[in-house]
Length: 141
Image (tube, rainbow, N blue to C red; front, side, top):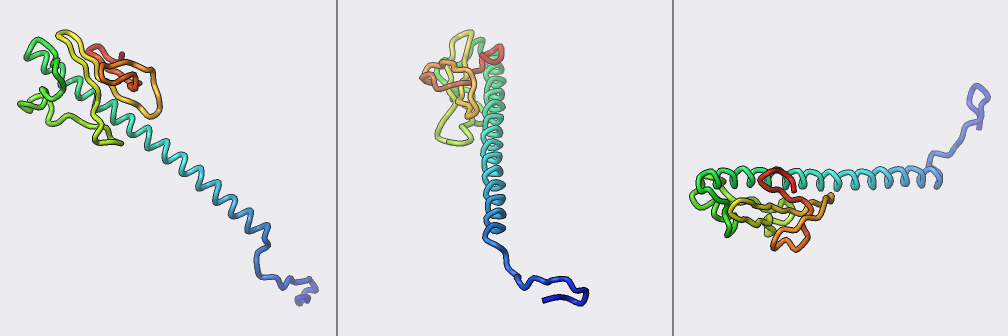
């Protein structure tokens, strides 16, 4: 079939199998990239929250020591008793039943958490070697 200019016209109005496969492949690749990026972003944001919460606990521990001349040796629950140091002990953002690890002595303490994006393994009492981010009175351990 020819148009008024003498050029051949195609009667095909659909897509070929190759075109459909190419478009589908592109969509799958874009989706996979988006999912990987999103999960990485979630891990990074949860790790940032963990570090921030350990920093808040560290400040509360320093206030406790300022008032009592020692760090709590029993656990973090002593920080919330009168509610003057911290309102509540934070929990892990991914698993709320998981609490941050703490060991304390008269003049030293260690707070520990497990970061999803890794870190250096540090040992905190009941942490059992699962902590890879630890914080003490002088910063990161």
